[in-house]
Image (cartoon, rainbow, N blue to C red):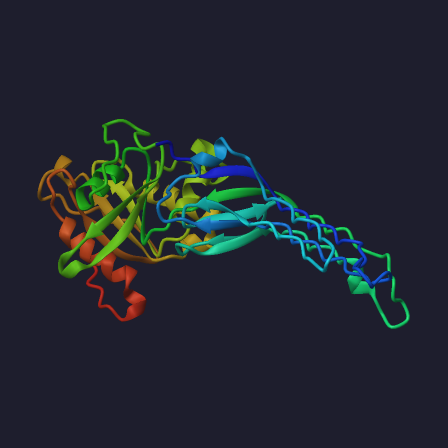
Length: 336
């Protein structure tokens, strides 16, 4: 299934039904009073978070969502039938925008957001009767339903976000600590779409990891689609900055990643982050972890996802950071 995280659609609510203009015409009541009923309400359009979805692919093929209009009122004070609302199912974590302005988000499964309100039904002439105006011929047309062109923007919901340059070992790490099966190869940009994996620990504990495609210089400006990828770690509580152990200048790599993150979102850059030196199997066993300047870092570790070394300690560290606001002790891994 293709991963689609942006879509533009039209949401059109139904019009309200017109009120009726009618008078009672019963036997022995030649001049009955007004009995025109109100029109029914038009259907509204909602966005709803569906936990069974993880992509906006359907909205590439269906870009027009329109609710039905309400039925007009009838004589005998019969109110017209209101139209049913329609629901646009989206993955949890979807934001709804109009002209770049956030309308709202649906985060929790089953949560709904009104995006186009149906028109109110018009009043029938029976509503206009008074003691001095006994035979009103006034009635109202139904209100028009709202029309909106909206943008759906999916942001993955995860606890930990993996951040690194292309071929930093993010997908290998995700595959080693979860049941996810991302594409893995020894060349840049193997990962072309964000991936989610559930990392399980002992005692039934778990947290969700998001792997995004590699970040390159200029990513915050959209180079390499970096701005689209970075938004998928906006909801994370903790960031893991991955640097290959065999890189020639780890300080430069770290500084580049942090700069791109800061330029994209200072708030995101302020989240707790750990440095993970990956691919430790490619350097001699006694090689110390690189000593780099990383203000604000809360943990440093070295791992080999291929040799499966250092993974358990890293998992415990990340889990502790994710739940640090719940009073969980965090045993951070520091370089020797």
